[in-house]
Image 1 (cartoon, rainbow, N blue to C red):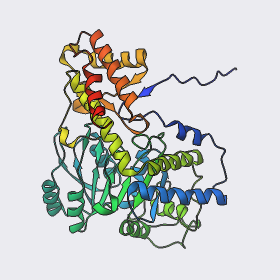
Image 2: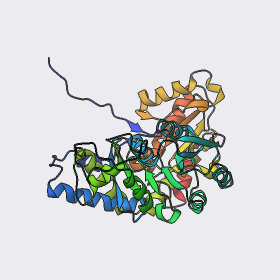
Image 3: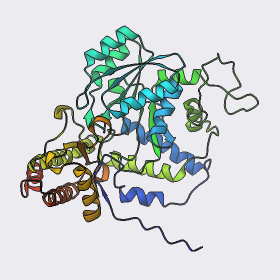
Image 4: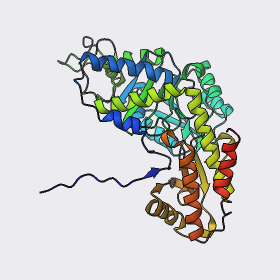
Length: 413
């Protein structure tokens, strides 16, 4: 049997993620593998830990990568932090808050939620009242939920949790690198992310940072299988406290990345190269500069869709910098939202996103993140969207999208 070469169609990924990977990241992934205990390899792992301390804005020693998609990072955090029966509080304002609920329930937690309407964020006062009522061991929250495009303010909520002695976990998959995130200054204990959004890489590696008090809790749950030495001597563990996953056991992964380099799994070397390059590019640009870049191009995209006469979704005061929700015009009729997305993809090679749950079929999500947070990508997408909408008979302002975006750019030129 003859196998043809892989032929990937050209795409400009302007949805909520994944995004078009920075060519420098792709180039890094093409390098040859090294053994996972080669001194060069272990030095590179150490370098990556330092780079992500800068990305997360933290001094946490336990800052490294979980090999797997961003969801692997989420599960590693929750399965390692939660002991069955723990009370966990999850503020929910979109699809990915519900994901935290599901995973926490699978970990055996007693899960409590407070909810904000989709398109809004959770008030700190609501979190404080819930903590006082529930007395949770853990607060698990999303920063940027791409399903609603909202960015949850965290400083006040994290301070409230710390005042009550509650550990805080945050899923920053969709926001890190494009929105302000100050792990240490805000006092957040565990944060996970992914490469495929603002960091400009492929899905498959989950950066994580863990505070000393969270690391102490995780390490206290360490368990060594009978007859297998993978770290310290075997210890007695109270029933129900053993971490339910081997691969996602952060206690073992901390030993793997730590000075002893205890064997746990074979490192995903090409993804390590990708993660290193994503962080290097971000650090070289400067974290504040990268956040400002996302704000600029996200603001231009927002102005552009409004300039076309479209309506942006949600509380714009709390919108993520890197993705905008757009209400699908009523004039498109049934299935019109999908027809527009299909035409953009087939005629222009541009992908934008639909949405989940109560917003499915009502909202498009257009991303400007990572490598695609740049002027030409924004203007090209707006020009193509105008043409597709005009072909569908939607009354849009001729040149209004590109014109409005260019006005935003002219203000900073």
